[in-house]
Image (cartoon, rainbow, N blue to C red; front, side, top):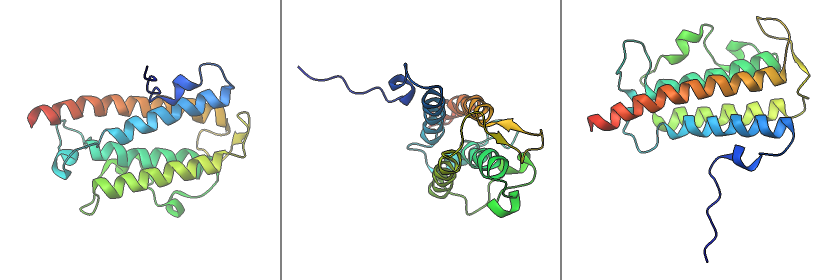
Length: 168
């Protein structure tokens, strides 16, 4: 008798657990969905523009680097956008440079994600991020927002990926 493979979603392993472990599991699941958008694509496919906006699969992942950094590195840790190397305007975070590649953008995303986890680790869910344009908000709010934002972009990416792969 063979053992069933573990569910690829971390959230499935946290059906019962602390609020923090469940929030982190859902953030993790969405982060892995963002990374998976680029699996097996060519550079041209990752850059394909199929909608009038600047939204591309590679652009989604690049924007998610911005998202991680703006919420954890800036809002929670209090660093400036310039210091962490992100655009002042969110719209600019979608713009691809000539040297942006699948490998480089994925590396940037994984690094931003790892550092975000390190930044947030010592904080409790009720601790405040005070370096935010909205004013103070809790780490809990940031995690819930990350689930929302990453899931939205993963959904956009699923549709674009389906179109890219259908085009061959």
